[in-house]
Image 1 (cartoon, rainbow, N blue to C red):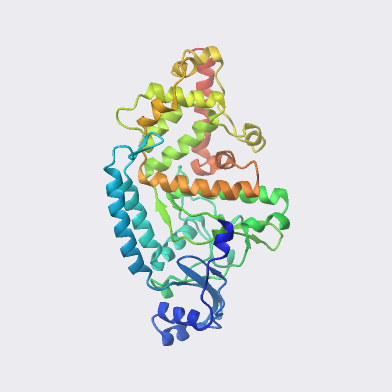
Image 2: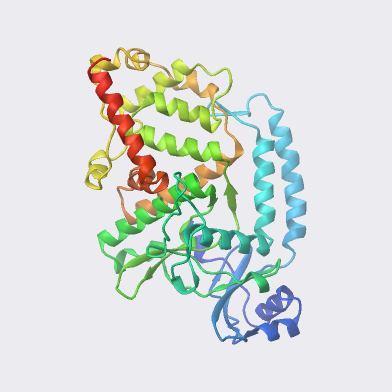
Length: 418
């Protein structure tokens, strides 16, 4: 896949200029705005290609993304056909369940279709990129800006400019077929191995996890496509590394209960708390109304105890994460987890209780791509272990301390059998 990403054919020379003139609404308009256009593309993808130029008004270097011709007509034809196919598949009795999880292919495809159409309107991508920069407090030239995102206690989150960068966008001159961005060169993230230390690669992997924790749980807005072609490494003046993110054509929004549920699931997995995990599933809306919560809880607990779901607790302790006190076997047997520790529940018995809202298909996609990149940087990478130490940032100090106090008090009560 990486080789394919690097080998997408591009148009150069006069053909590239023709693309640029069309995207900018004509040659005169293009030459009014830009100078020093390099007709050899910096990069190419399936939907467009990127060239370097300068702004005529200021001389600032920019990267311009030019859309390939006739994409909307192609999308109209192909997506109409795929819509019919999704509807037909939903009518088949054996295809509404995947791995036992119930879902509507039509609903998932409708959401995917909306995202795909937005991807070929570069004005939408420009707004997505601008929103990402506002959420993380990222300014032009990698400077610190005021963040519009808040922790759960209502305090502004700190700017991420010291560890994250994304190109600023020039929305006023971007069009449906032309995206104008700050020129931000970087080293492709999969090529960082030979030019970075192990500690720097671990830092980059943690930055990626930290980015998506904030995206999922506070910003409620994320790029669905963090593959290696959209990620880079920038070396700062003091030789630190900074993660660079490109391409916000495909983005997804989450509702508040979904974001809160994701955060609670992460905490529950780290603390191996099956009760909290099931509560979070309900909050996320992934359990059907008729779900047998006792069986679901039992399966979650069994997955914890058998190591099917695990985190790197030693690594987390080294990074300062405070775990909820684990119950002893005797204590566990007196709680709701008793069923989980005494009764084995098969996967097939519980998967039918789950449903998959369309947004989580995009969450899963982002997590899968992120996991591949993370393991390239750090073979021991997993999202939850890397993200968990930043939960305090998401919750805010006051909320985090209150929650830790509640965890401690709860463990004391159970130890005393209060």
